[in-house]
Image 1 (spheres, rainbow, N blue to C red):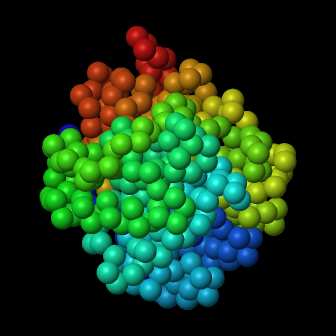
Image 2: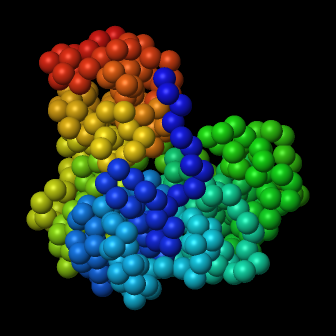
Length: 391
Ligand code: SF4
């Protein structure tokens, strides 16, 4: 199997990434939230300067696709006028913060996220690695435990705010006023004690690898026991803050984003869904997934060919065709290469594209050993039962 290219950095607004369908320009909403004006503005910009497709990412960002060398500058100017850019590409890359979409006005989440963003924008901010990130998860119980992050601000079992290194069973007790400083101190410790150099190619510079290689946290940083996180991902439907809507493959069209912006402010989630604030019922907007039983929730697929330069096969049409055949509670991941961007973790069923077709991996990761190599898209469409045999 060909080794996928690991770039080690994520695109931004100030540092777009080339893809098979043009430049990808990533927008990082502050506090994980877009006002109605910001959401409508992104929709307009994506239609005018991209190909009208917007990805929702697993780090709760948006990606405008299909941008060209000629349209990049006006797109960036539009994002700047909406206040959605940073002073430098370095500051933008550091502002890698995922925020629980289930915050309430009293729990401090937005104030902590803003303080953290401010600390990361300063010239003396720690020079963290490209994929290093923060989770602000201060609702009554953590919901971002399955979302990659290196430093987490969350609540302990007895309700205290804590700052926890990912991979540690406990954290340091903090307050709303001290949480961001504690996170910065932990990031500086990580760098000072060699965390950037530890780990294999896919996980280098991550907190879990650093602790796994025997790094000892500063005194007090693991004393308050953390709460177990949510065992499952949220599903589309009404929630206390509004309505949670999903999208096929986490991709939304500019016109759908404009329609949702007309309904309320949007909270961007790491589950590739949008929470429409104060919306009580399923919006009547084409392309939304609004019920938990929708078969499209049982498949994930990356951009695939031709949208990704590394992809070895198209992915999404095959995933769409196979979705009705995936049993309830199972997940089928169709990956354009072994990198597995759309779902790097193990899935019940994974089809990893190879030069001649697809390898089938049962209960494994996209780069795992295939249980059935050498399948083709047409054989899978003709005999979808291949997926469930001996599951
Ligand atoms: S997993 Fe998909 S999106 Fe990621 S590099 Fe491979 S083909 Fe591209």
